[in-house]
Length: 83
Length: 128
Image (cartoon, rainbow over all chains, first blue to last red; front, side, top):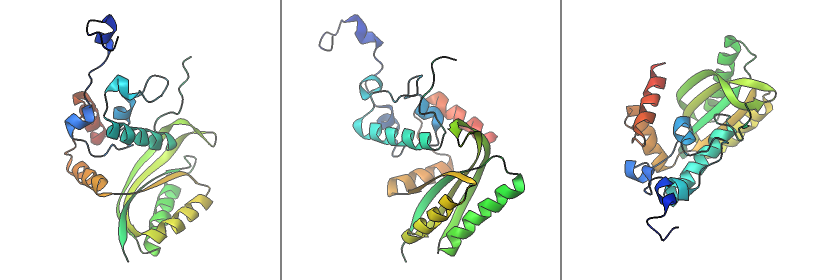
């Protein structure tokens, strides 16, 4: 699938360039919870780099920011699927 | 003595009244100043809902502050905050040059935009 450009699943992947690099972000703040939530799934897990296209450096910053925000109860560690 | 720039966020027990909140905030400020630090900015976010319960409480009074302090002050401040039962959580971070640049940009309201609509949400929050 990875090597086949016409594979139907290819279109489902999000853009492959890092949004933080593009915007010139130097530091990801744990207080920007709306931003962090965009890089998490509905269970509250951090999305992998292969899905979001984030660069390695920014993914590290992002995960640190998410973990800080979780500690301060700004975003949940786990979200229950049943509501 | 060399001082570093720090950011600290702490959560107070929401059961207390406004008078007790400001008392605790000035207690923390005094603690920092007594140990050779100076408070730069204190931002009280007020009572917010927690993402999960801490000590069986679902809300907390958030305080976000910035200060300059020598490194050995942090230990003393944190020890005193740990002892105080009304402070439910605290997080202290030393700022590196990149974070400082971020802080300056944030003060000017000149942050790099990652998502267009996220930025609008942030502006809404500032108006409150």
